[in-house]
Length: 154
Ligand code: SF4
Ligand code: SF4
Image (cartoon, rainbow, N blue to C red):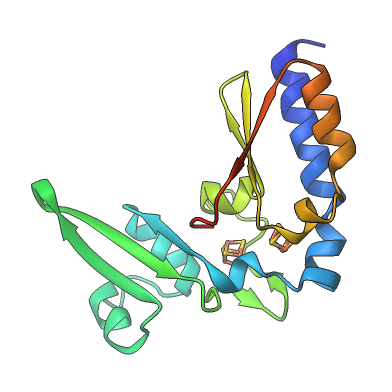
């Protein structure tokens, strides 16, 4: 198996390993305590479950979890405070199977940085409790560097 496939497969297995722990033990901490940023209005609509009939400004006016910011070059950024995430139902992500989910939601708590580095969300309880240590050891044994991130956006 080539290295790229092996790496993707290992990360997929590691994330899958904690699925049940995320829902039952951690109760989706990361979907309730961080924020995500995007430039893509369709992603914001997906997360808030609103169609084109409503402007995103009107959503932001009544739901403080959405902040719309204009930055240099008139770029618009949307910041969504996961307090909790509007897509969280119970402790489950209601858009989990949607291929357009935010990349951070797909990858958390393991972020691949090329072929050499894996960044790990240090504050994820599954990480601090060693739930996927066997995968991290495997990755290190194959020469990858593991970097632990401080608390950041989900
Ligand atoms: S913080 Fe970690 S253990 Fe908790 S739900 Fe998120 S990925 Fe799962
Ligand atoms: S979209 Fe789903 S995975 Fe992402 S923060 Fe919201 S509930 Fe969590």
